[in-house]
Image 1 (tube, rainbow, N blue to C red):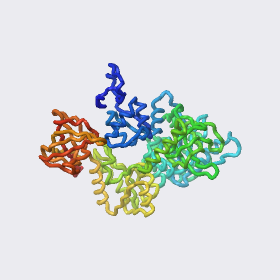
Image 2: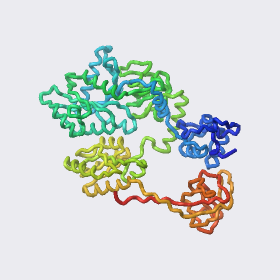
Image 3: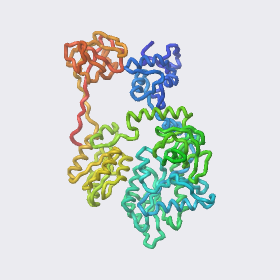
Image 4: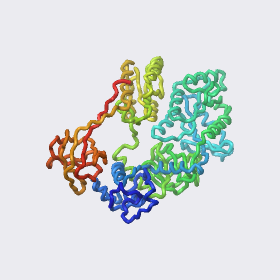
Length: 610
C-alpha cells in the first residue's frame, strides 16, 4: 500500500478502490468535521476507510485503541496527519446550528427575547408586571400559576418573549457561560432619578453583549420627571438616543400608569424586524437553559427558551452532561403543551440531572445517542473543567491573543472616588497604540462587587482596582470565575504594569537558530515505536527538545519534533558532533539513508518598547 499522503481519493485505506480520471482530479476536502464522541469505527465508515489499516497506523504512533475508541484531541491530531486531512471535532449543538444556518431558505422570523435592565427601583419589575397583566385580559381566569423565569405575550398577533428576571445579574451570568440568549435589551431609567450607578453597569453589560438597546424613560407621570435631563445624562454615559442625534431608540413611559406600553411593544417588534431575528424550524430543536431546579415531585426541571426547531414530547435530548427524554412540557401558566416553537419559553421534565443555567439544550436522534454524548462529556470533564474558559491575565495575554490581529486589552476600572475613575479613564486609553488598544468595558467608583466579577468573566476582562481593595469574598469569587483582579495605590505602578502587558500583547520577533545537522546512515523499524534513524552528527549538536527538518536531495520533506534521542542504548538530551545516535521522529516514518536531519530552535524576542 502506498503512503497515505500519496492517495488522491477519499478511500485512502481501501486497496481495492480503483482510481479513475474523475476522482483523481477531484481534490480531497481540506477539513473533515466529526461529532464529539465519534469512534474510530464511525470515522472509518463515514470516510470509506478500512478500520484495521487505520488502527495499525495509529498504534505505530504509540496509541492503544480499538474500533470503539472515542476520538479525543490527541487522537484526532494523530489521525489527521495519517490520513492527510484536517479533522475538527464539533459539538452536536454546533453541528445543528451550522445545519440551521446553511439553509437560509428555511429561516423564519422568531419571537424576540427581551431582557429589562436598569437601576434598582427604576421600575423593572413594575414594567414586567404591567406588560404581563395587560396581556392576560383574553386569557383564562386564574392568571399565573407558576414562575418559570420567562413568559411570552402576543402583540398584534406576534409573540414577544420576556425574561422575567429583572436586572443584569442573570443576563451576565448566562453570557459568562457563552449563552447568547437575549435579542433586545430594554434599558429602563427613571425620569425623576436619572442615570444611576446600576444604570451605567447595565449599559456596559448590554454594550459588551453587543445587542440592540431600547431606552425606556420611566415614571414620566411624576411631577419631578425630566426626560430631557435624563437623555443628557445618558449621552454622557455613552448612550446617544435618536432625539440627541444618536441611533438608539427611546420612549417615555409610565409602567405604573401603563402609559405608552403599546408603543414600547411596537418598538420591540420594529427593532426585531430591522435585525431579523430568525431561526430554522426544520432542524432538531435546540435552545438554552434559563434556569433549573430539583422539584420534590417532578424531579429535575428546567426552563428552556427554544432557538431553533420545534420541541415535542418524547424527544431525546442532551444538555451539558445531562441527558433525557421529554416527559412533559408546560408553559408559564402551568398548562401542558404538545410542542414548543422558536422563541418560546417552556418548562421541561425528563432530565437525568439538574442542568446548569446557560447550558445548551439539544434534541438528539435517540436516547442512546444522548446517553453516549453524556458519558463522553462526563469523561472529558474529569480531565478538564469544561465550565471554566481560559482566563485573561496580564501574564497570559500573549498566549491568549490571535496572531496578526489588532490586540485588545479589556479592563474594568473601580476606584475609591469618581475623580480617580475619571483620571484613569482619561490616562489608560491614551496608552493605546495602532497595535494594542485598551478598551474600558466598565468604570465606576466604589468597591469591587460580584457584578464586576460577572462582567469580567463574560467579557474576558481584567479588573483594575485603585484604592479599592477587594474583600476576601470577592477574591474567592474571582478565583472561582478565573478573573484576574489587580489592586494599586499608585497610578504610576498601574500604568507601568499596563504598558508591560501591552508589550506582551505584541507579536514576538521569532528567529530560528540552526544548532546541528546529522546524516542518516541506517534506518530501523521497531514495533509500536516506528522508524528510528541511525545517524552521525556532522555539525553542532542535536538536542532532544529541538525542532527538526528532514532534508532529502536539497528539499525539505518534513518538519516536526524529535520523539526520542539515544546514544548507544541510553536516552540522552543531546549528542555532539562526530558522535553516533539514534533519532526517533514524531509522526514520520519515511526516513531514508542519506537524509539530513537539521536541528533548530526558535527564539522569541519580545519588543522592549511600543
